[in-house]
Each structure stands twice: as structure tokens, then as C-alpha cells.
Image (cartoon, rainbow, N blue to C red):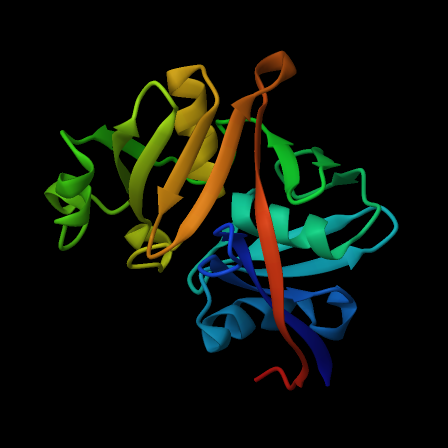
Length: 221
């Protein structure tokens, strides 16, 4: 029996919204050969296995694939591992910082899935989408809510990696922040908020609020 933490990452200011995430803080409880099946069974956009709590080594799986990096799993895991100054997914070392209300991780925009970014004319155009624009299978659609304030409406469709539409996507946020070369405040999905800002040496910091919904035993299939 493994111990599973279920939380939401990139919540709105009132604690609502956020992208559900599963984290096994003791990754050894789930053998490597069972992890893809576990991710598919849980049906979340990503599941994290912490393989070394001291070194903060993590592995990230979608229902269909393992990722070298993903933003909302990194932020959520950093939030659970209080005191962690870094995480180590396969892509490289991810720095972790905190303020009173949010956790931030620093990642390179080229890490994670190779999302296309497409700008639409208005937030209403983003809202009106019934699926990925042009049938693309790994794409983020966005529009300015208020360009002066840096607020953005976005929806992300990572169909290629087994997620029809993602509620909040940190790796896409790193790419958009790098493209715009400025701090941005992204409103994604049904009610999630992602903060992103350029950092030193080509990194981008992404962050937000998290909330734990449940901690329970889980029997791997």
C-alpha cells in the first residue's frame, strides 16, 4: 500500500480552482515498472514520485508518458516538501523559492513538452474554443486580458501526452513568459492562476498557491 497526496496547484486567490496533482512522497512504494500504469489509473494530468527525499529527485508521469519536467507537478511537490531549496527532475535542477502565499520554481523554457503558442484576438476567442486550435495536439492558446497589467487568459491542450485539456500548465507558462520577456499573470482553465516572471541565466520562475485535498492509501494496480 502506498501513501498518496492529492492536491490542487495554481489555485485562485480564494483557494478555488487549481490543477489536481497526485504525489507519492515515498516513491519507493511504487516500483518503476508500475508507475505508468498508476498514472493512467489515477487519471490526473500528472503524478509525481519522489525517489530521494533528501536529494529531492522526482519523476513525473502523465496518463500516457513520462516527462523530463512539468510545471504544476514541480510547484506542487515543492509546496509539499517544506524547506526544499531545489528539486531534481530528469531535466535538471529546479530552484525553489517561497513567499507568504505562493511557491515558485525556476526552470528553463525549453524543458517540458514542446508546446506551440498561438495568440488569439481576445479572451472571448479563447473561451470559445471547443478543442485545440487547428487540431494541433500540443498547443497553448492565449490572449491579453490587460496587456498593461500583464494579465492573460489561456487554455492548453496537451492531447499528445494524454491530456485533452489541462487546467493549469506551468511548462507552457515558462515558454510564454520567455517569449514575452516580462512578468505575466495567467488565468487558465476553469479558475486557475499562474504567476510567471523572467529570472537569471535564461530561467523563468513560475508559481502559485496550492491546497491539499486528501491524503490516503493507494494500492497500485
